[in-house]
Image (cartoon, rainbow, N blue to C red; front, top):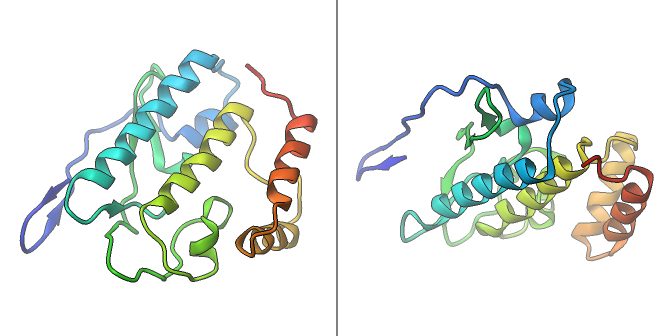
Length: 172
């Protein structure tokens, strides 16, 4: 990303392997624990770079496996889809992103910072390690209820995550 006084330009390379989402959920290819950790570290490093590249952090606001591309060898990862990217302002309250990856403060329309990307990355980490779509075993209305409970400070999500894990142990 190149930030000038008048405009921000984005230059990306072509990544031939498709999205991390497609690799996880639409193929039967093996994903070893070490490869999963390698890909997740690359995603975390890319987010850290975005957040540290200027005085005011650059916030992606839609961190998820669908917005991460992997090469054909499944060794390298790049973050993509910068449509919701903004530099942090004093008060950011506009809800942007994908519901199941969205931080509670964003979901509730409260003031948020670059830490909302960290929350979304946490959901993505779970998705990669479990190789499951977040909340895939529940109806949409239940997901909304759970997210409202989390946003209100109710620890039900932690309990629910443990429940999901016991039903779907890691496939590594």
